[in-house]
Image (cartoon, rainbow, N blue to C red; front, side, top):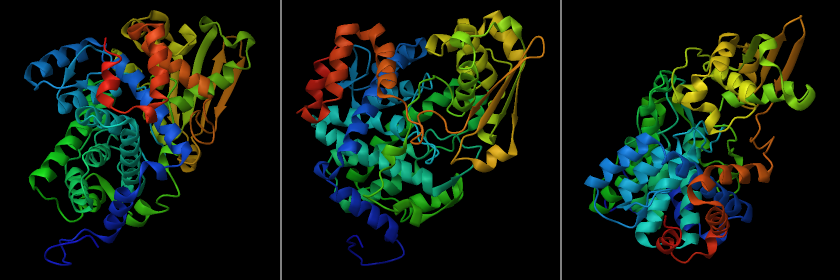
Length: 462
């Protein structure tokens, strides 16, 4: 048990949390497997790219101007901009930007996006403290691990959006480690962070409401706040995780699953990177479409010859069936839109999901011809399999069929490294220029050699 001035009591942390805290506090950078360190560096590079792209949006530019007027000065980087601020404002803005284009890393087994929830806070804290790259990597890995394990151990409700939920804990753990908090205060940080999670709303996403992007910013800022509270002497309930994720925003929590195989199984190795800027479940339909197109000459179809598209998917994907798409944000959560824009444009980059693509008459016409329905057998196979079938009906009675068994990017169907690298440069070169983007990428993949993250940021000032 963790030390307590009053001895063991009903207010002492439960044993699973004690074991978790012991693991976090005792794990050094040198204890991390090489594959885990490499994956974390690539995750941070991916976050840098998507945050850079997100911070170019009109909404983020306007919010940054407002936030920076109110924020204390500081050396923390608003990534992809010339601006610096105090850590909480930087974490908040970068957290929002990390999900703006829905291009962020995630974990199917953890029902969440631990990377985009943890990394913005970890970077801000590391820059504020002048931490080394190794210290940042350790904090990010362990923050990710805790966040992902909460998501895996909780039986999340379908109505709850995964952003802003488990990520508060990941952000808090990362910041607490960078600040050197001991085991007793780590437990307090985790318990307080658990009660600061948002009761997020999946319907906001389906209603095309961009307030949904604030959830990740909340995770980052609230995680930093939880650490400050612990340092000031605030206390948390004795089992914040178990209560919040067992009764408030989920329908059950399994403590044994939370700590199973600690140190032997690293959940960061079981996440996915996105190659399409769209809701993850829609990727099953995109993969099935690509499978169908692979059977055509040149991988292209004459969209005018398409009479109807049928999609059969698991429940979570079938929710993305909307056809009345009016905004770029809404486009990211509609399988009919995703398939239509890829068929019309022949690609799936950010520009294929922008407002011009939404207003494209050819895209809208094809959306109207696309129907998505749940296939119960596919739902039963989820999450181990993410099955989806796409059938394209062509004029003259011909059909094309495609199938997804496991989405690309999952551990059982990984992306090629060069595909993820291409995404980095696609997103950063327009902002940094080719040469500076190349140097940034190389530096991020060598983070363990950086002695000071403040100096790292200054070296790539815009």
